[in-house]
Amino acid sequence: MLENIINRVSCGRLTAPEPSAEQLELLFQAALRAPDHKGIKPWQYIVFSGEEQLNQLADLYLQASLLVEPDLEESKRVRILSLPHRAPMVIVAVAKSRNHEKVPHIEEVLSAGAGVQNLLLGAYDLGYGAYWRSGPLCFNPHLKTLLGLEQEDTMVGFIYLGTPSIALKAKPVPEVKDFVRFGLD
Ligand SMILES: Cc1cc2nc3c(=O)[nH]c(=O)nc-3n(C[C@H](O)[C@H](O)[C@H](O)COP(=O)(O)O)c2cc1C
Image 1 (cartoon, helix red, strand yellow):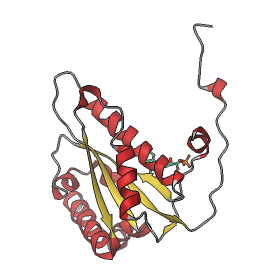
Image 2 (cartoon, helix red, strand yellow):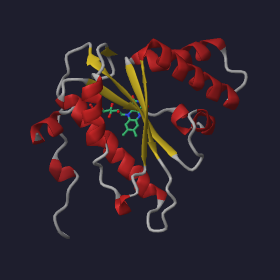
Image 3 (cartoon, helix red, strand yellow):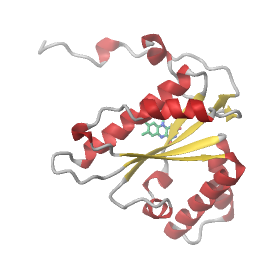
Image 4 (cartoon, protein in one colour):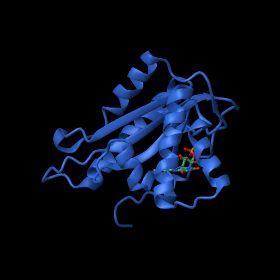
């Protein structure tokens, strides 16, 4: 368990199959156990899988990009349309704004981030590959509207999921002493 947390790596080269419906249910159960101040459940996950849904997401990406930059050149349009097709499944992870008087939005974002990490760890544990991405679309207000979100919500990332098409390589673990201080010494 702890070993899998330490050894988890991201994988951007993803192919079919994606997690089954049963596995996805477990992955989301893990995500939905993220720490959550005041129990407000500030999360939403929007899943796109299969050609049709990935094309729909690509369309929204393009529409949102054109609303920011109407003269977007052709090569950039083609690239944007290709983005969701880097994996068989893309999940838009959202921190919902619950406007709780004791919970600032930063805590909702942190909670959603913890949920995403649970999802990544679960995917790794089940033998799938995953990659957490952001980029300009993550901060595009028009994409929020097109996805049915509120402007006060935060898209915390696009999670690409599938089967690694390359061997996963362990990464060096940073030196604990470089990041941790004990007391005031
Ligand atoms: C909020 C967030 C957004 C990220 N966005 C991107 C991204 O857009 N593109 C990218 O290549 N990596 C992005 N990353 C980093 C990768 O998900 C990954 O963590 C990084 O490549 C290191 O790989 P590792 O997880 O195997 O250590 C992001 C990470 C986080 C936490």
